[in-house]
Image (cartoon, rainbow, N blue to C red; front, side):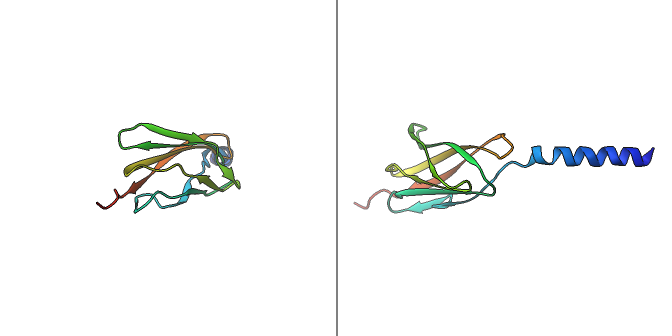
Length: 117
């Protein structure tokens, strides 16, 4: 009986493992939390596994949605032309589909210093 339960539990783990394998954002350029003197011309998002990036949006500190655009790039790294980011806190929100088809999303923060007087 114990062997049957152990086999059933092992089968469950093997079946459930692919469904739990959601992609993660490994790194970005600029990095989340970066404080820059000027707006970057490009945003790069690198995921831990092949991913389909479905949207990227930029919001200002007031929460205003600035721009949605279609990214291009490989299945793990996506380079996106960046809009002119406003001085202050900007949130870059992304959404993607994992290899298993489950949606994942997140955001990074980029701060642009105001110009010196």
